[in-house]
Length: 406
Image 1 (tube, rainbow, N blue to C red):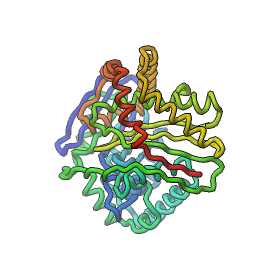
Image 2 (image 1 turned 120 degrees about the vertical axis):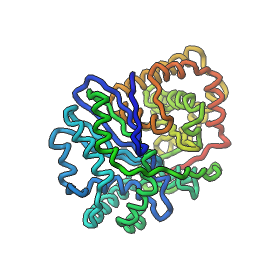
Image 3 (image 1 turned 30 degrees about the vertical axis):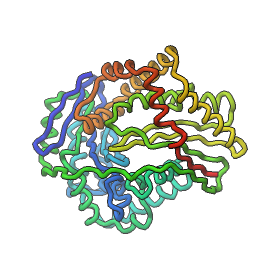
Image 4 (image 1 turned 60 degrees about the vertical axis):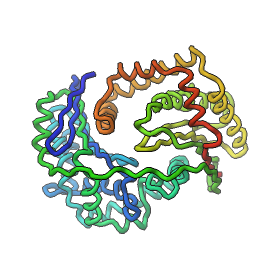
């Protein structure tokens, strides 16, 4: 897998992989998200992701939305705790059209007052919809527990009160402070020569005024394990169990990814899925996840079950966690876990949109992208003792927090 890179004079980095597909993908990844908001800005990173589509100096909202749709392409965006991304999928002959549009909405948006007002109503509906979904809401409230009184703990959507106060001035202040050119990566996958990618990147992104970052993200507050039970009018109990975890620079993060995949990853044969769903039939949804961030990380386990099965579910999960802490994986177990993770990574990277986004994030965070072969070698070097060590650090019962919707 060959990646080509280039840095514009303003600090924006370019990474491209050429392939033979008639469909191309590109995106602008920005190293800023809800974590970078001031208290009065809560929700503004996500709000900006919405309103940059609502008109530019030369396009009205309809023309922004139609620019790629008219040629069968797709334009999209997302916001996380630490990143914002505007990306597109299109036929390779429309590559310049895509990069020009991404540049236009990111750097030339006008934020018309009428459009801001309409989009606030859209996001209010999104917030209310989220509140109606306990299986999603519980993740936000759990992170509020883990990162109490810290920007990391605030949800991405914001609140009705903060949302209503946003105006063009606040938007531009946030973007000026956080949309730093040396924290941007333009990532691309498609049957287009790197020479052409650089030509178009220079033409559009190269004209952006340099705006370098002169701050670091602050450390998160000290973590104190906590347990909460919240009464909810729901049919099932919803539960999250978790702990803070390794940050994105920690050498143990790959071992934790492997442990997470074994415990409650996407495979139907994960330990938690087998124990709760297949063997006992007491949970339909059960999963674990690990997300590394700057200076911290989050590991959690989610399951939903009927109230009469709640204690039984806890006992089964406790038993599975204790097994991972007390007993090393056998050679065959470790081999199977490694093969499964490698296969899942290969399938994910075969999706070119996933590949474009993942290589862009890797380049943004680490300034390089490992090939699949390199990643495979790192995974294959993991020993059973490594998994045991990570299990005892992350799954230590004294450090676990619990949130229950009952």
